[in-house]
Image (cartoon, rainbow, N blue to C red; front, side, top):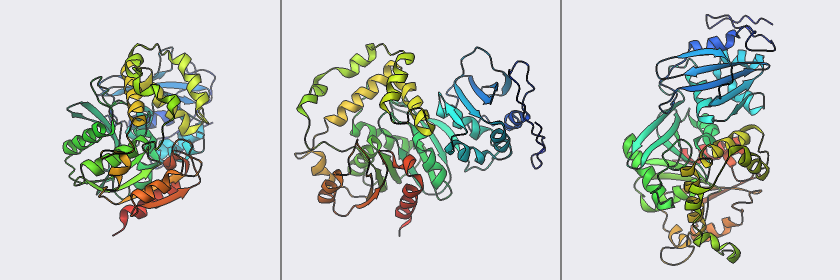
Length: 407
């Protein structure tokens, strides 16, 4: 099938042959690679192989800091895989914004590494606007912190949940970048950020790391949006650095347990972070276990999110960071002078909490406790689970936009 399209000075064709070795290379892929801009994607200092699957045909884009080449897929293991039907590749070659609807509709899949998969689409978009989607790494005292950002103007920092990465805020970046500069980060220990074994991995440590990143970026004051553990970190920034935080949006934020299950108290004493370093974690074994534990673990954004989690968890430093962060969330003291619920009442920045009625990790029942501790906060209830920015994207981002733009 040949498809001739005007507007990009290139004829875009697609072919459906059984093998990349004998198939004519789809010109849609040539159109993408002709626009490759290495300054947009962060290859993290390595040559990368992105597999582009067009139905029964697969080609590998081999990228480095200076250039690229396109070659038939071989037995070499790709760093990321992007698959889509011929017609969607044609549309994306004409307008890369077509990728998001294709992904949301389940026609496009990005697997193994969302950082590189999304980064490839951004780097081949042909967009030269300074506000375009871009990926970077910034040096801090604890190591590099990886970011994904788009837009300009008043900044908004997005903080992912435990085990999550900046890609969990792709919908937020897409929805809000026309209004402001949206910066999603990988918290230290996760995604493509540094994973120091010396890290404390508690909310205060994460908060200090984010504030140092603000210093590196030259941002004096910033609005924050955090999901799950990222919400707990956003609260800690508001408590410890009130002059650096503008308004704060909490998406199903992790909160100190009012009553701990004594049967789980062993978590406080067990040396899980150190065991994580020694723990054998072959991906072939761990992958199916994790996907069975996560609803829809093989579908859409959820499948990509599981890939992101496993990328870090299948490394010793990543397991250390995950276990230590989880243990510190569990041991977060609820009461006393330094207890979470005591301190929450002194939160200075305006805050809005978004709760999912179907959330089983941070049940909506926590809302009544927040209302008592912080009566001036706003609350939104949505019919979703623990990740509102993905599960109820339109409602979440409409509420966020309204809250952040209020005079």
